[in-house]
Length: 432
Image (cartoon, rainbow, N blue to C red; front, side, top):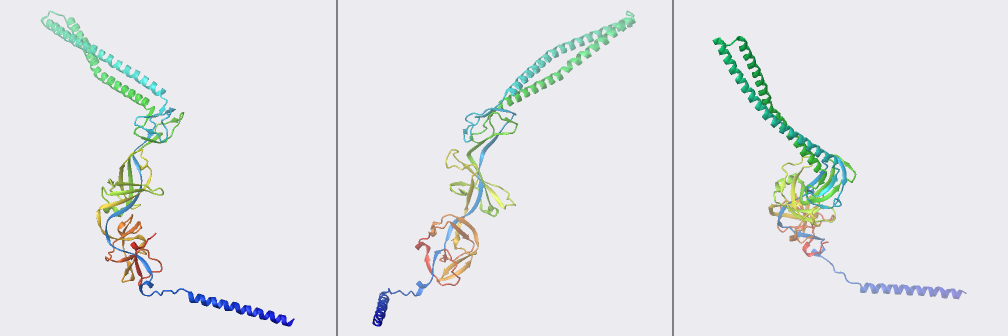
């Protein structure tokens, strides 16, 4: 038994020693066959940074503003009489194209038709009264002439009786009778003249009555016509606010018509941009939010005052377009506009917006990073192919730079002023 245990222990020891020998042999083989690493020294040992060579580029000053498009031609069509809706044509639907004069809604016109008939009868009566006055005036003037002639004859007879009385050929009683007759004829002449003189004023009053009745008839006919509510402009129905059987009052909106052929876009810009915005400056419009669409236009009007509360100014852009085109600017669309001042096309120093950190940029000079403070004049959005960068956001600097300076495109947090770096031009690498 002791011999068996001794043999088992010896066997295990030999196997363990053999395993260790094999392991050391494998380790030695791996060490001998390992690849030799190249030792990097010199400039390639420095951290690499992507840089761009700055240059002055002729660029126009650009200002960004926002506004909502509005149709120059739009109408809230009101009811001009109080009545009940009796007809809404099949063509009166939201989104339906209408022409000027097309029927939108018809109101009950029974009361207004009766008012027209009553006004016509009143006008006829007034004209008849005016004709009667003309006849009466002629008769009154004839009576006045006859009364005056009768007065003249009475006065002449009185004078003859007085002459006869003076010669003793007439009695006092005859003189008194002639005097009494003269007085009677004079009174009749005065009354006839007064009656005739009243007719011009009465005719003027009758003429005013005729004009009043004519105006009432015109108003009644206009109210009858207003029972048919028609479109005042060419356009598209935006809203329809009534239904058949609904009673409407004067001023209630029946429908809203919008013509998007002529658009007005008031853009609000920062007040400081006023010296840099001129009439006919080009404007690139873009729909804000998702589904961006673009339009080109120009400044047509500039408001003279600034808004002291929002510190903004307003420019107006008028756009003529096809109102049924799918690419038109719809009323109510919120727009972003970039105004380019064509008169300020001067060489400027431009760097990517991402190259700025706390209003400073990192410049590589003699392979040494230098932090340079800069002042931003304004920002712009768009591609600048001269630099070969995919950036869309740029900063235009007031601070001058040196020709040939290498600006770090995207300074990371590990880069510090005074570090030695290795520059790689952005045009030589693919930036995502």
